[in-house]
Each structure stands twice: as structure tokens, then as C-alpha cells.
Image 1 (tube, rainbow, N blue to C red):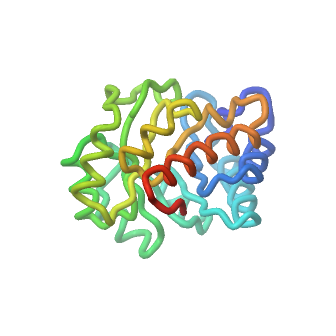
Image 2 (image 1 turned 90 degrees about the vertical axis):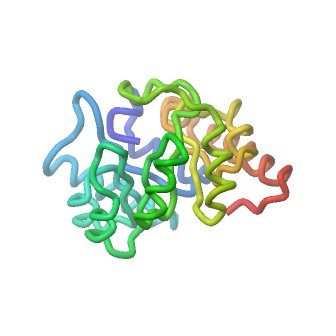
Image 3 (image 1 turned 60 degrees about the horizontal axis):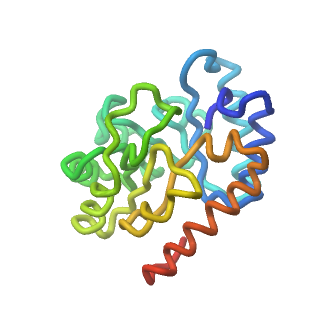
Length: 210
């Protein structure tokens, strides 16, 4: 989530509610019109980081390696057009590295570059990323789980409590989402509902939710 994803509400209040609800990771994704820059971005990022640390949840920065290092973030997530994964790995050391992928070839490249996880999608249509690639469904998640069982994959794009089940049963280790939480009437309750769906899908497949 970024500062502009919470509608008229304070995004830090939304993040805190999501943390209470049980999110297991948070990615700062400050994008689009009106996005914060400079000292304002650093202040917002620090506030997000501190909330995450208070709840024992990893804090990831999207794309911006410099900001991630400045904030002493737990990791960085990059897209296919956001830089070379090997170079980012060199810069961040043993911090978490996530890489967006859309097919098995990109998953393979991310694994070779030392990614700790891949975000695969868009699984469904999404409004959070206007320049998103075409919807890929759950098949790439299934292929990635079979080819790289030791590399966690996270489904991204258009995911809600109503459609998260197939993402997990396809082999994903989790789901990544913005508006289903940030624009929910009750973000904490929304997270609890999504998490319940994910945990039930894990149980049905005989897997352990982490």
C-alpha cells in the first residue's frame, strides 16, 4: 500500500488496522499521481516501518533500493522493468528480495538471481496497477510450485477474500493485495476474512500456513 491507496482515511490508521487483523508482511508501494517524494516519503516510510516492527511483521519497499537501505527495511521487491535482480541482491545483501514474474521463464530467472520469493500475476484483473500485464490466471502459480517447490510464490492482482482460495490451492504461499484491505469499510475485519480463507485453503491442501 501507498499513501494514496486508503481513500479519504489516514493510511497509517489503515495499516495499523491491517496489522491488528493479521497481515504477515507489508510492502510500501508509493506509486501514481500525488505520490510522496523526498522527505515526505521518508517520513511516511519510517512511520510504516515502525508500525510493522511493533507488530513483528516484515517491512518491504517496492522498487526503491536506496529508500529501503535508508529505512533499514527488511527487504525490497522489484518488477521486471525495475532493475536487475542480481544487482539488487548485491546491493541489499541478505535482506529479503522479491521479484515480480508473469510466467515460468521469469520465475526461473528470479530464482537464479537469488530471489527469496516471487510475486506472480496479475492473477485477476486489477485497478491498482494501470500498466499491469494481461491477466494470467492461476496456471503460472501451479507451474512455479511444481518447478521450484522451495521458492515461495505469492499471487498478485485483483485478489479478494472471494477469489483467494484458487490462488492458494494452485500452490501459492500467500496472496498480495491492496484495495481489498485499504478500501474496505473495516480493514481489520477484511484481513481476518482473507486470512481465514487462506488458512482454510492451506488446510484443505494439507499444507502448513506460515
